[in-house]
Structure formats: structure tokens, C-alpha cells
Length: 251
Image (tube, rainbow, N blue to C red; front, side):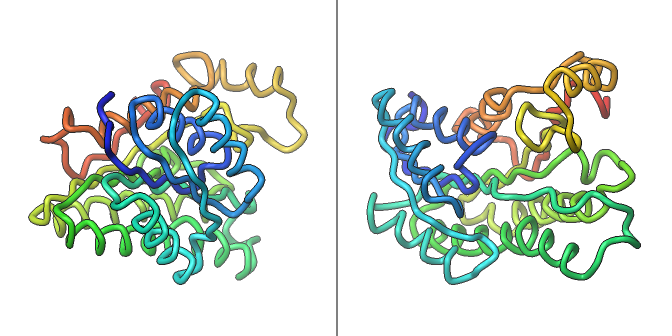
């Protein structure tokens, strides 16, 4: 129960890593606010948390919109009296294609969600935490960012590399305000994003068995466990770190 009496905001919490992370925080005593664009899916996350005895509420927000992000943070504070931990997970893969084949909308959409959206969340989270004694922030980057290159993923990888740099910069800027900021960089995780076009579960698993040294996709719960560690007091000496969770792909 490392997060008893703590209020945690998780963006992109309607499915996958975000939902697993919200559930994990709730199991350890936190009051969790789940944010994202899909109201019905967020409600499913809240119901799952409530069914296991946890405390959660939802706020609909598109992180690429500054007013929506500001409102999500202020709503969290107004409902629950504070914000102690934030997990900036909202993101999108976008179109997979060589860089020269992307159009401006392809590029701009991924940038707006994955990088600008994360900066907006960080901005408003930090503003509250600085005025209220500090906190912890964990950003979700990717091994397809600062750690690995793959053809066709240039827009996505560029934004996620930016998340890694943003994390380290912010970690230095706000450590004096008692705000610890770190990141995780997942590799292939068992979420819809891990599938190629038209790929079945069996085909996906066979492909990853040959590509990932561990021999399988990671589980969202494994990423959630790393996020909780970085947000906890156990990681009090960990600052500006980008923890890679990719089954040995970049080892």
C-alpha cells in the first residue's frame, strides 16, 4: 500500500498500459483519476477499479488541447484535494510509413499527441506540484525513441525520443521543487499497438518470439510495476532516468 492517501492522475488510461497502471495504483491505496478521449472506455476502467475495492474517477480530455489538460489537472485537485503522482501515458502510433511518404497531417497529429500533449500535461502537473510541496511524474516514452530505430516509425520514434529528452530536462529543472521526474520506455507490449496490419495473435506472437530475446511480448502489468516503482519513495534517488522495458531488444 505504497500510495495510500495519494492522488494519482493517469492519462491514456482507457486501455493497455494506462489501464494496467491505474489498476495497480488503486490496488496500492491511491485515489486514481483516469483521463483520456474515450468516455465509455474510461468508465470501464473506473468500474474495474471499483469492483476490486479501489477508488477512481474519470475525466475526458484530449491531451493535445491545452485547455483540456489544464481542466483535467484542476478537476483532479478539486475532486480529491491534491495531485501527488502523474503518469503521462497518452499517445498514438500514427501512420507507419517512410518519412517522405507522410503528409503534414500525419506528422502533426502524432507530434501534437505524443510530444506536445505530454509537455502540456507536464506543464500543468508541475505548476500544481510546485505550489503544494512536490510530487512524482512518470512519462511513458518508448524503446522506439532514444534506444532503437526501425524503418517506418520515424514520426512516432521522433516524438518518443523527444519525451526522453523532455524528461531529463524537466527532472533537472524541478528537482529543487521536490518533484521527481522519470520515464519508462516499453518495447513490444501486449496491446493493440503491438500488432501489424491484419496480424493475428498467433502471427504476432510468432514474430515477437523471434525478435524479442525474452521470447514474448511484455505484459502491461510489467510496465505498470516499473511505473509504480519510479513513482514511489523507494525510487527517491532515481531522477531523470529512462527505464527500458523491452525484453532485451536493446540490450
